[in-house]
Length: 75
Length: 350
Image (cartoon, rainbow over all chains, first blue to last red; front, side, top):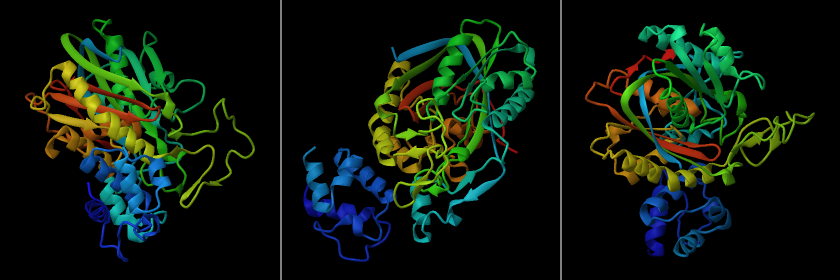
C-alpha cells in the first residue's frame, strides 16, 4: 500500500470531487464533505481494499489522511 | 453450544404490518440538504414508517397474526406457543404476549412469553419457538416480532432518527416430523453500550431530568430515555462477525452458496449489507432489500423483507433461506430455514 494510492481511494469515497485539493497532509475532518456517513464509507473501503478494520478510536485519533494511512499500516 | 439444529418443525407462513404514515428522508431537516442524497444512497433508507400515537409494536404484531391465521385457516385453539420479541413492549409489567394471547382468543393452554432482543431477535425467536414446538406434536405456534423504535429515538439525533422505522410481524410454525433448522447464535455483552437506552430501567431509574434533551455533539441531541447508537462500532462489529457467522451456519447445515436461494439479512443499512454480500461473494439478486421503503425496522426487518420483497417469489423449488440478524446486545445469529411450505402474505398497512 502506498500513500498516494490510499489518498486516491480516500478521495473516491467522496460523493463528488472535493472543493479543495486533497493530499496526505489534508485534515480530512475539515473537508466540507466529511460526515459520519463519510466515515462509514471510508471504513468500508479500508475493509474491502486492505482487509483491515478502522475503529471509531482510529478515526477519532487521526487528523490527516497520512495519520489514517499509518494506522492502517500498523495493523 | 451456539451452533445447533432444531428438528421436526415447519415454517408455514410469514406476514408483516407497517404503519401507513411515513416520513421522507429527502425532506428531513436533521440532514443537511446537500447530504440527503448521499445519505439515502449509502444507507438505502428513503422512507420510514411511524406508528400513530397509541399504536404499539404489539398492535402491529397482532394485526399480522390475525391476517396470517386467516390466510392459513388456523384456529386460535390450535396455538400452543406464542413468543413475542420486542424492545418496545406495551407495558414494563406485564408481558405483552399475554395480552396478545387474550386478544387473539387463544385458549389458556398456551405458553406465552416475551423476549427482549432487537435486531437479532427474529433468528433467536425462530430458535426458541422451534425448540419448544419440536417437543409438542400436533401443536402450532406463532412467533411475533416487532418494534416501534420511532418512540425511542430523538428527532435531534442524526445517528438514529433517519434510520429507524416501525413494524410488526407474525410467523407461523408447526410441528412436523423429519425437518431440520440450523442455527449459529452468539453474544458479546462487552458492547452493550453501543446501542442503548440508558434511562428508565432499574440501573438508571426515571428521575426529574430523564426527559431533558442533552447535547452530545452536533446533531446528537437526545434524552436519557432515547436510544444512543455508536454507528462506527456497530459497523465494525457487523464487518467482523456477520459474514463468518453466515458461513458457519451454512457449513453446519451443509448448504452451499448454490443451494441458497436468498440471503435475508437484518436491514441495518445498505453499506453494511453490501460489505457482507461482497465478503460472501453472493449475487445481488439473492440479497433482497426493504430499506428504501421501510427503513431499519429493528427485529422485524427480516420478516418485513420477506413479506415485501419475496411475496409471490418463493415457489416450492426455492426453499433454502439463510437468515442473519445482528445488533443490540451485542447479539447476532444466523439460520438456515426451509421456506418451501411457507405462505408469504401481502404486507399490511394500517
